[in-house]
Image 1 (cartoon, helix red, strand yellow):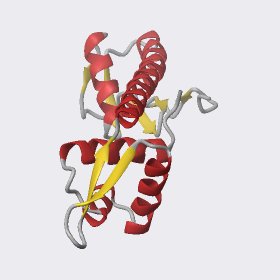
Image 2: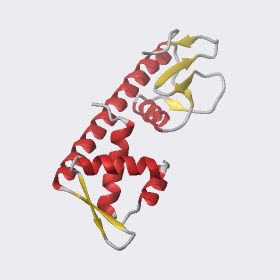
Image 3: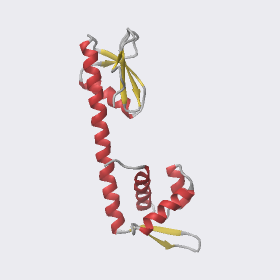
Image 4: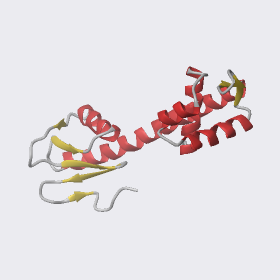
Length: 166
């Protein structure tokens, strides 16, 4: 199951409340880089579903408490997040392995990587695992990262795959 943005935010909100029950809507909004109204909407939903209770700590201060149902919901969201992360890792790794097969079949044992982030890191680790050196030297095939797509650009201008991976 893929985590929606809504569920991702719910998970982060529940984790933050668990760590700091005195967290304010403003502090939660800042941590998620969203508007306070968005946090308010999420909290109202979580309260309506019975995952969070709200208590007045002081005159104008609220305290959020995760219910046992909320803990179970957070656990499910965490498992979904981990499963989705592994699914994406396996997908990227399969694509890198297919690209490296093309590179090795063309007689290369070195490659450049164009891009950064987690997908690029999976590319680097897979190259190391397969004995292909990652270098900045010119005249070598280049793995170009476009989101989750990996395209091989050979020095002669040939691309693999010719069509983007689905």
